[in-house]
Image (cartoon, rainbow, N blue to C red; front, side, top):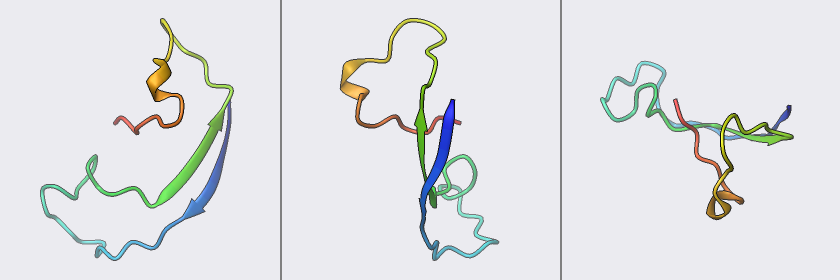
Length: 57
């Protein structure tokens, strides 16, 4: 698997933000990643997801 950082974004949330909708795993992502040559463990990735795979934690 080949993974690289595409870009980083400035977060305006404070480090001690404890709002229930902005804590891990729901904290907004500030890094855009590009991953190639991913292996599917079972089955196939649905064709409607070919442009975007959401982050799952």
